[in-house]
Length: 166
Image (cartoon, rainbow, N blue to C red; front, side, top):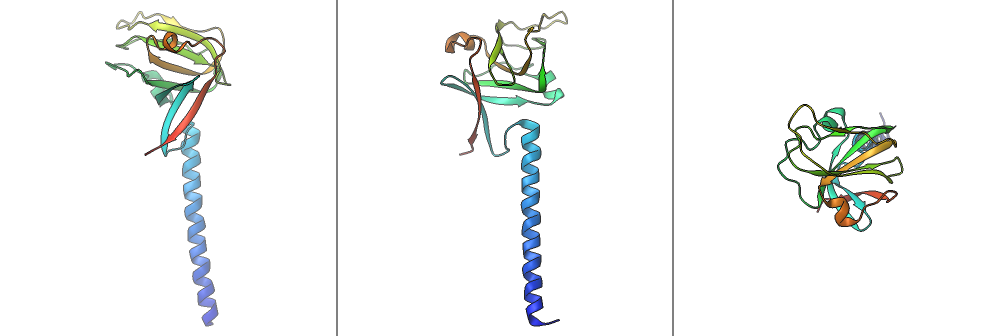
């Protein structure tokens, strides 16, 4: 092997390793983004008008079933966003939920299509179920009184943001 060939081989190996590393990082990023709708390196927020909420994401079936059950409190600027794969008529109830909530259904364009204010906790198996007749793709839950406090109404636009970690 000639001396120039060893240098070329080292460059080729380094470039190959760098490309593989970039591929792995990009692949991991897109897998996470597809699953949760936000990249892995920040905090998701849902905003209506000029009011934003730090949210937990319920994107899997297990996360959506658990929701905010068994929580004893929820901050005024906190919430949960339920993300579904496609628009449909999604039903919600308050079984094993300990705090009153406002529930806001959003369509695929993130516009409000239904609001259920002040849903009350239910500890029995005979909890009422809320099923809007309009299809939605997202449901936002926050502390009861939030919808009235910030003046939410049908047709209002929600925005989803990612704030970088400090």
